[in-house]
Length: 240
Image (tube, rainbow, N blue to C red; front, top):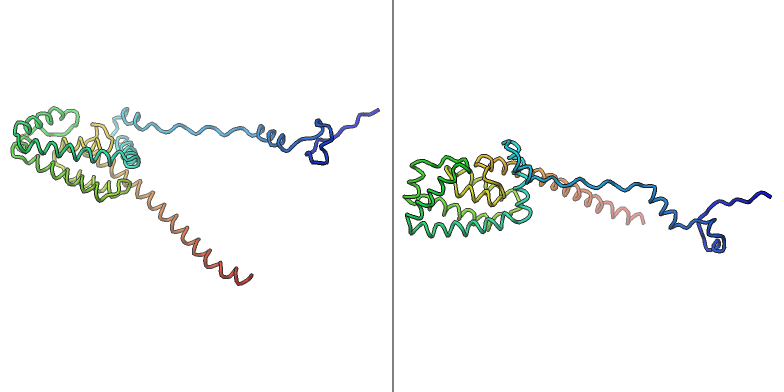
């Protein structure tokens, strides 16, 4: 006698009495379907820009990776926090320097010692005279004032913050402490000269401008769609 064969089917309340070998539940079909689809590959690890920045000596790469670091400092809030720290440090230096020429001369000697690391020409008579004549005090006091104004007026996640920093940078002649503070604020190392910091800020500003333009276009497109939807609503109501 030929054995009767049956085709598996989805189980229903009517089929509950049948043999469990002859029916397939919906859950078992879902499991079989999931087993046949391979899992998606994991996402690539994030780019370690800090490691790349420390390993390169290329001016172009320093500017690009510096721009990435500048944007990171703006977004995570570290730039604003460091600006406040720098303002307090400069005000303390101005207070001590205003009452002591020996303190100002010691600062000038420290400036000369940092010359090799910062790659800035500072060992000349005009710079020493600036510390003797208190010109360095007025420069740093003005720098602290502009930093404080930036904190009070600029949005640290917008191009306005970068414009403020770039303006201060463009007005520096032979900075040392001020450049070092800007490097600290933006999270850059001491290989970033005035020119390097300037290029990094310009690239970061370009990235923000492109992002802002795309966001504005999306908002305009959404506004157009919402307006069209509102104009279509009375026609639908009238037809009903």
